Amino acid sequence: MISTECIKRDLRDIRYYYMRKAQFESADSSLGILPIKRTAEKYNCAIRNAPLRLCDLYICLYLKGQTQEAVAIEWGYTPQYIRKMLCELITFFKNNLSARRI
Image 1 (cartoon, rainbow, N blue to C red):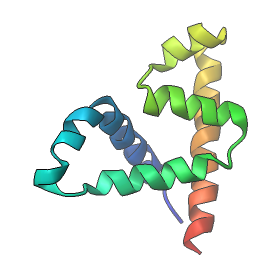
Image 2: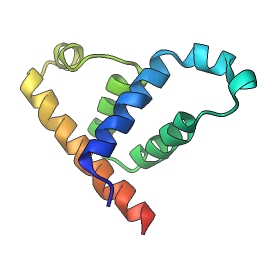
Image 3: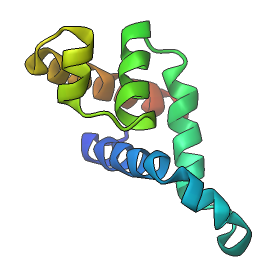
Image 4: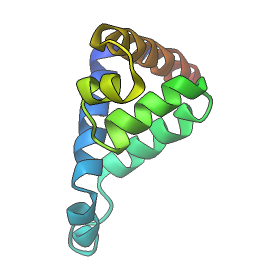
């Protein structure tokens, strides 16, 4: 079973990758395909089966690089509610990615 810590680490790496995607893609010819691209694809594939609001949260936080506070303001929620949704997102990945490994 995939651990919560592993999911959090992967999500941090995915966020960083998408924030600097242009630089990484320009280096593809020199470096080859980086493992983070496969990791991002795995999570992007899994999120397609998530409830719409969790998918939206994933896009905002990890693909667009927004902060939790910015999402809370944009959506009109409290930061605490966004953190609760983030816990739901991590649980979703933990259940969905673990099921794919069986």
